[in-house]
Image 1 (cartoon, rainbow, N blue to C red):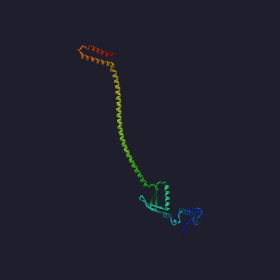
Image 2 (cartoon, rainbow, N blue to C red):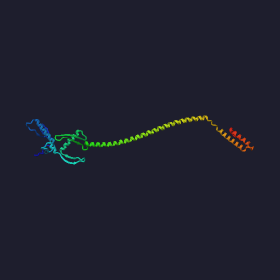
Image 3 (tube, rainbow, N blue to C red):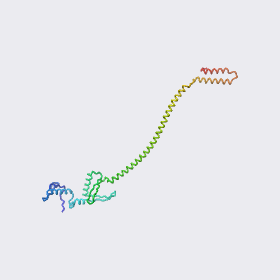
Image 4 (cartoon, rainbow, N blue to C red):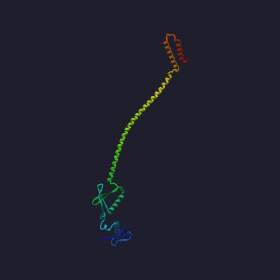
Length: 272
């Protein structure tokens, strides 16, 4: 016969009695040959089992052990292929809820951030590994693939940087050689300029010495006397021409004497 009017809520033990949340005595251990401690143990087990299945109808657990009950509480909701080539299953039910809560507790208590692997030992199958992964997290294989992809990108960037650095070093070497050549030429020009400055200073000093010596030894005649001499010589040339032109005429004596007198006065600086 099915009875659904059992006392709901959590049950509590009190010595050899079982109480409901309201404190009402639900049952009491009967007087029999069992020892008092065994009565207490039976009361504890009854309370533990009732509370463990709190909220579950009696017909769901009647005649079943815990494993059979949990197996019956698993429902397959969906099975479909996944984009990565695998096959996905979606389950629901009380057993799945218990398992999810248990796994979540294990995940939190382990301090895992992304995924957690748990090892189980089954008496028939042997050791089993269960991997839990956050939906938005990455598996070890995915992490490795991501790391390898990032490594390849970094390697490509590093190769480009190395090539650019090599080119820069070559250009720097060429520039350095050019600078060396220009520096050598500049030093040569500077040496030449220093030599020219020294030669110029030597020539300047020599020129000043020569000018001083020349000025000390050369006599510069008086300009007025020289002009007077030139004029007198010109008059004398005129006299010679008259004599040659009119020689034998007997009429040039007075003019010649006058011109000779003029030439003499010119040399003497006398104005006539």
